[in-house]
Picture 1 (cartoon, helix red, strand yellow):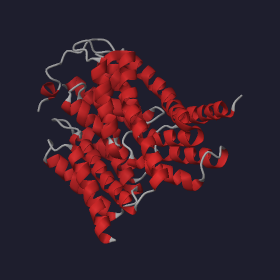
Picture 2: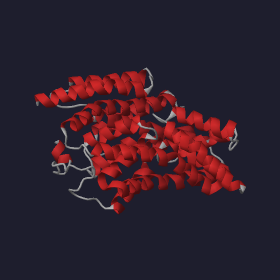
Picture 3: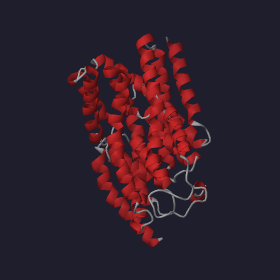
Picture 4: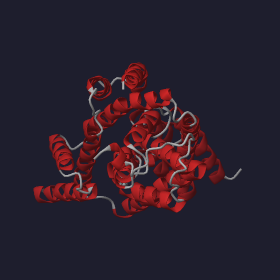
Length: 200
Length: 181
């Protein structure tokens, strides 16, 4: 599918921080993020957000999603919540960000407390741990599939692919601290993008 | 000052700094939360903290819902809400300000270059996140194999809803544990 098709034909970007082209209702934002919250098992909010907000609803495009992921990880806080704030802000400004975050967190908050009450009353069988392992495995699969789907594509992708590979090697395999790695790779990668943009 | 108000206040005083210092989230945040709630504040015992961590893993949503459970142990329902707001609000305000500022330059050449430059790094961070979770998973090689299988299935059939895969994973592992006993 082409990038334009995925965006639902929306290609012209208004020069503003909030998109005005097709305003999405606050109720719709709250509902979408509430559903995202109560279904995102395994703590991989970004992968679920990609599936439900980008692929199903086309509210933002791949590039916006990825830059949201990057910014969300280099500022303090949970990456998933930070990404949610940015998407909400992009869709409807201040109110959109509030609707998205409250939607995302309210369901899990109630569920986690209900689980805690149940746990203190009846305890847990070993089977529960096994079930959690199975869910965790599926969640990791969703994370990997999302990352692989978002690998750089296009004609001049050798440079970007090398950047992705370097990130995985340093942060994922060698477990170097994320922030310095990102701060070293970002200028290189942005420089590459500038050169590509000029040649295009 | 009544005791419960004092507890709520100390929840705020513990979680607001954690919110602003937790760059990269995850493991370091967990260690800090444990230190504060077990050793410093005495909200939970070490055993209770481990139980709460297991419960938070079972719930959907961002991994750090653990903060709500610590707040709940310390001061009931009000504590749960207080801890959640204290952990998420400050960092959310920071990222909101950053996103607004950033959005102002939308449409400029360098805005596009920065976005395109960050994209391959973000893809790498998502993959690294998967590796990190795999590494701390207590399930061992079976979980690795199941995770790879799930990846292949999702890439091969993009229309497959992840929830089906989640149910299948939980069901199969639960069944295997039941039969193994």
